[in-house]
Image (cartoon, rainbow, N blue to C red; front, top):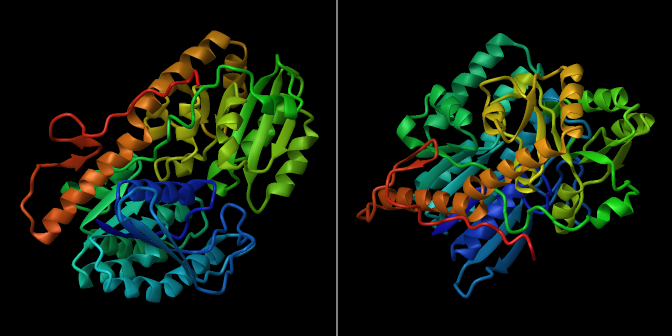
Length: 447
């Protein structure tokens, strides 16, 4: 197939949407598809354009795929305004700047005649050009929601006007229902798509994934612990990811200070974002925290394996609007996760019997859960093993992307009027045919 991807975030960003958009495109190239990407220069989570890229110029990258097929990749990076502090209207202007600059880059692909036009949200502001290109080229228009950006903005109190919210939600419904298919990364988010008026038969679960052959439990001691000067008998509580408003990182600062007297617990914060330096100063003041920059992908498995416990704070108001992208790697590493979530949310259901979940916004509950895990090595081992089993069964890269590719192929056949060779109906992750074509295999952790 020819697949046109529009995503404001893309490789070489190390976290969030950019990481997954980049990995998806690499996998599609490996399968022999031709892919074109319209994106912005990398800027997340630092909210600063990476060195070697321009915020104000168009640029283009081309390369062949890694297989013997004729697959090829073309990446067009469009100008974008990046605010130093992304808040409310500055974030809106940021998204709008990419929406406007990406119009010519998208329209030129009409003549390429893609089979699928895939828009990754955020940002929904790029819907008009994605729909326009899809209609003119008679391609499948596909919306993939990584983050309900508008809902999150109102829930996090970045905007408070009721008339504005009604207007925006009405426009959002019209745009979402205009796509031929829509997908989201969790079952709760798929249900939210349906609640927004997207026909249930056109909704697909497309969760985030992890390469379980790259992220896996290490049996030997991790050298990174020695580099950081962490004692062998210390219990490492690790947070690795972006430093954003939805995460509620103030909770971790409070918890590390409350745990200052527990010398056996060592906090490691590996993060980046606009307020990183301020966070680092407060964290180091507790005396039991190490603050690191985001690590390259080549060291990600080693980083995740220094943890005895993974920390996943999340604000209650952001629950089920986003599914933390870092969770896949945490679970694949075979270490337990301590998360904040309300009962009945997707995170709480996913971590049932695979981690501990405590109420959001309660430092006391978080400290209690952390102490329980720190004092129970057998519980950590049990929860970590079940998390790893779930990751290899339901989150493996080949399994998840194989199912999504199958859905795109079926949609493309329907759109082009070809005879369907197989009946595939996807909703909430269920495939109505025989055994899955792609089966995840357990990684050999002895290598």
